[in-house]
Length: 192
Image (cartoon, rainbow, N blue to C red; front, side, top):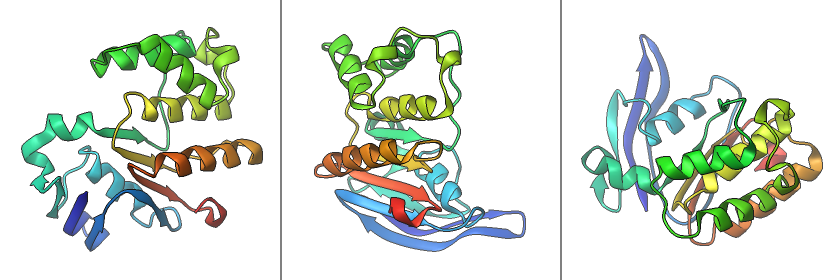
């Protein structure tokens, strides 16, 4: 469970997040609003990228600041724009991030399973620089799922996906939400 308590974020005089509080358990939670509404700011605070101006976040009853490594281990995050190494293949990209996460077990099997789930197994050995925007977005989704994290945060996850892939993404997220916290932001109502 994640508890957000009286969270605020200011950029100079602009208030992006205003005294926001919520308890989040397993399931899917959507943040919907226009660009500039504070969705990305909230997500960047949840991931530890930004510090809040005030308030705090608890994970498993403790402030995330006090358990950074433990919290990060359970976190999967897809920002709006993902930077990939263009000369890596899809497989190499996931293998690289698996090593950063210090994953153990049958990493190759997990990578192939994830590539299959996001319909990239047939291009696993192609360079990422040859991928379309939608293919890169699907690779980003696979990165989020790597290591089976408990908390999944998606910032505008369906940007660049065609309607068929959007539906597939929604089905994947629905199946994952049974035993995980899934938070996604969008400005597309049908995605919620």
